[in-house]
Image 1 (cartoon, rainbow, N blue to C red):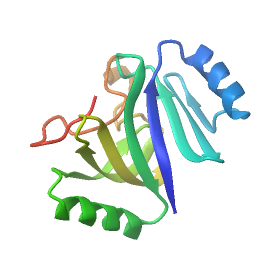
Image 2 (spheres, one colour):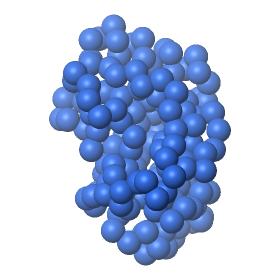
Image 3 (cartoon, rainbow, N blue to C red):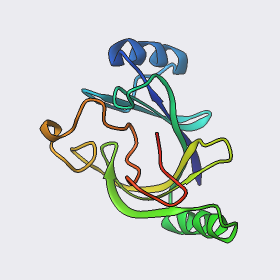
Image 4 (cartoon, one colour):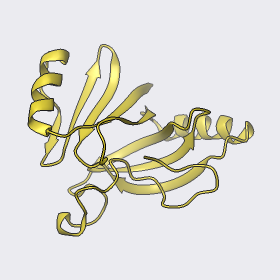
Length: 150
């Protein structure tokens, strides 16, 4: 089963957590110093916020899958359409270990497709002391031919 993903850059994490908790009628499932995530069932959405994007508003969109075969299916469709997919493979990002790929839509919006395997203690595999406050909210590759994020 697939879950729509939205990642929003925010200025004030605590104020935003209060707002979205009221909007969704529930507290976030995961909260870190710079990040919060709600796993909503109605609608089925993985909604994340962080102070890392360097700007406020939608940072990127995505599709989270429950099974690795679903990720393979999506990647094959995107590759067949020659949409400039960057298959990142296994990575640590947003306090999770995932397998993912990136593509940009015609408007330039970054989309990630990913399968999460486990929680992680770090945002992007690096100790918090090594991560700049303005680092990207998502963890896309630094260089790609047709894709990047943020």
